[in-house]
Length: 275
Image 1 (cartoon, rainbow, N blue to C red):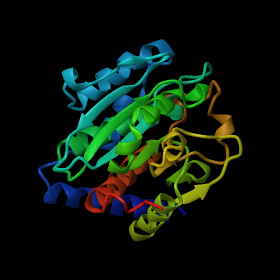
Image 2: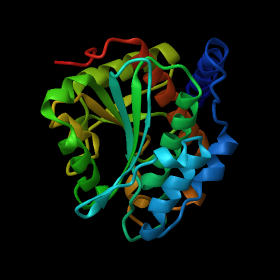
Image 3: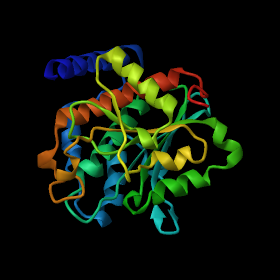
């Protein structure tokens, strides 16, 4: 199992290197760089500003970062224009439950999101990318529901897909929350995993949902990528959700796999995941 994991990690790193060679010097984050940003604030009321600062650190102009309040929700949004108006949303929630520091759930997803922002911003992309840090996911997907609802019905066909990043650092390979994901996106991830020799496992967890569901309900293909494990209850939503319990190699595999997945989306048709 370990041999397969490290072979897959090596191949992901090789793919990332090839991306660097082919495009305008996009920066591929190292494990050390990801770890530097992973030690996020343990208090919910400090996380909004922390997300903004992280986006700025990753190259987003402060003037282009939006954090407009809608009712009791304040999402953080940055849009990277591509060559077309075909749009892909990449998101993850920044709020946490009261217990622990919420590093696994879900500062890890925010760090991957921000580092993808830097990598994608450095590259020439066909599609337009919306980077969204969602507020109040733990209270019923409130932030993503606000964003999904705000997309006019007549514009939804222009939204190719949504990639949600939620809870990394427990498992050596990516998993997909199948009950919150569009089937075509799940299949695409599994096929990519086979190509890269990285195990990508769909899982179903009763009573567990994530922000991708808010977009699926509006007809936008979406899926949730994660690396939660069978012993997740030992860490998530507990005092054990802290940086000391994070597997950093797992976080980087999540980042690299998401980067390659998005690269393939960028090269494909906008309707590639449509029903």
